[in-house]
Length: 73
Ligand code: SF4
Image 1 (cartoon, rainbow, N blue to C red):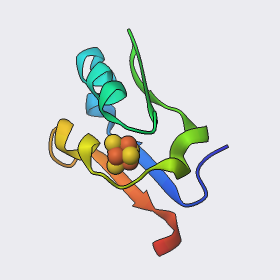
Image 2: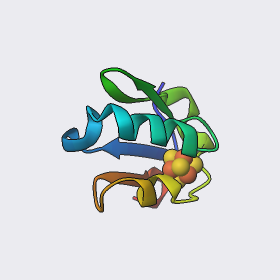
Image 3: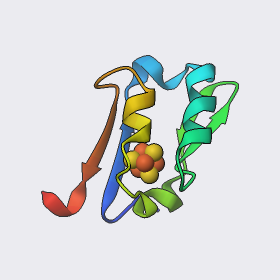
Image 4: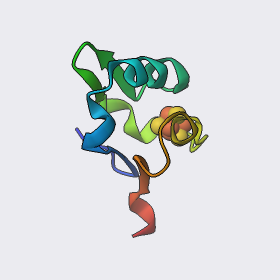
């Protein structure tokens, strides 16, 4: 099930970068990113656990990951 409060959008440009996928999997404290040889995927069941730490935003090229606060819209 997608998040009720948070959505995380990974730009298609970087979604297939296996190296970055690994980094994101390691960096996110609440395991929202899952890495595989095909790149990164989002574990939707963890989306609402996002603590807005911005570590993923810092790890990825600027603007390529978006944290969407669904409750703000
Ligand atoms: S902001 Fe932090 S908790 Fe949220 S997805 Fe990025 S790394 Fe994970």
